[in-house]
Image (cartoon, rainbow, N blue to C red; front, side, top):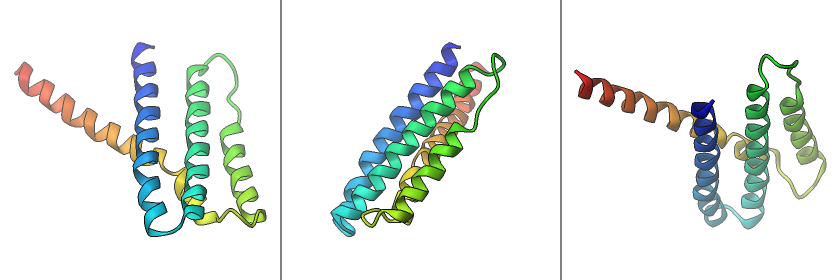
Length: 120
């Protein structure tokens, strides 16, 4: 379980860092409103990632729910109905956790390749 908690912490921190890194260029090149939309989506993505981690943690103990999918659907519905939110930046903000997963995967591949070379 220690590896799982380390993975969870790493993904959350990387997603948070990417959110900060991406928000400022969006604000500079587009508008503060678009950056706010992106930020709303990214924060919802962090909540989704945390809920997904809790579901994985309880794997085998009880039935998993579809709460994570529900939070995404609610986010898109609110973005489509509320005039201040725009669907595309909110959606792209929500997907910020995906590059964090790719970064973790690439990092672990290179780290395991380095480790195997050192062992040989």
